[in-house]
Length: 502
Image (cartoon, rainbow, N blue to C red; front, side, top):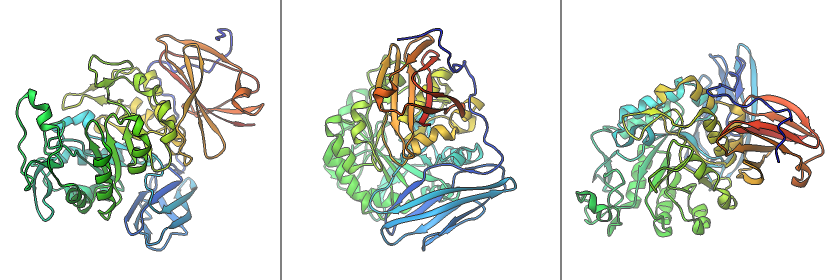
């Protein structure tokens, strides 16, 4: 199956930065399709790279929406269902960029998988309001927002006690003003996320969405042997009041976390979010049973297909912690349930400085494993949530997260999840169809050493006799494929291509 004499694209060397920097001229990135519900607030930051200052415009801008020409932030409310086609423009001293864009006002949101950041993998339960706000600012100053990274999500650790009109859960002393935090995040053109569970007590030991008391009074049962006493459903649930409170504060995303997931609690929160008056992306966690995948797709926008990921290629000594390869290459059975508005979630990205708490370390993934990690998640049309400290982004990690040709696979409006279509010894070939008629191919080396391959079965996969080929990580065109293709891939690495009929 291999041909060691065949010519090959150069493998990714350890620590190599493969992607060239974006040009000084403007380039508009991100999705071409965006969903919002009628009468709900709309917020969209046009993600564009290029030298600043830059001026933005959008036409024809639907009634009810405005655009800030200096920041590219579109805001407003659409009252009637329907599609609105417009052209986004960005101009600076080096030229003008245009992008066709469609706003779909209807019942379905998250028409492409969400991209953003989550606090758990770097701050754990030590998260606080200042750390979240600094992370939002770093998402902008680092340039990540110019590539479409949008959500700033608080994980477990914000919860205090219940009081107020709806007896909703209020923040603890670490988060003095969640409304002000959401306003500050929205002012940057970003969106804010929050965490909850229908259990009495969250995984990190904070108040959950139900209680033994009608008042919502909460006191965790102390001691390591009391897991079941804390992690159960109380007879009094506060689902609707909590959802209204999150909407009032201005949140745009909910991670709803417990195990095992069940349809009644998922459905109750889905109804509460829909009635809240605001669009909140609804993300379920964790280890969703595949037997009920049709229910998760009907009720939620994302659902965790696995236990927790960790920053290693292989599995860990803990049954609930899984390596990147263990998770990523076992997603094919979920593929029929992925599509616009409904996404399989193989958990967060474990790149950069991570650590599940205040003590961080560089990811244990090699650079080639990180290229494979992000390539596979984009092919899988998975939500992309960065888990590292955004204020400590090294050049390699920043380059990894800002390749717009790779991210375009995840933004693709067709919303198809890639599946494995061939195995070439130690190399798995994944295929994803794209909305422009092209096809993304990922050649993944699952061996612990460099492997060569030789593939001549393109006709059996229905491809045209001659294919144009582009290396997405290097953003370079390769020679056309006629009858066969050969290459060499480093240990646990990837060759990520886009092909189209020549």
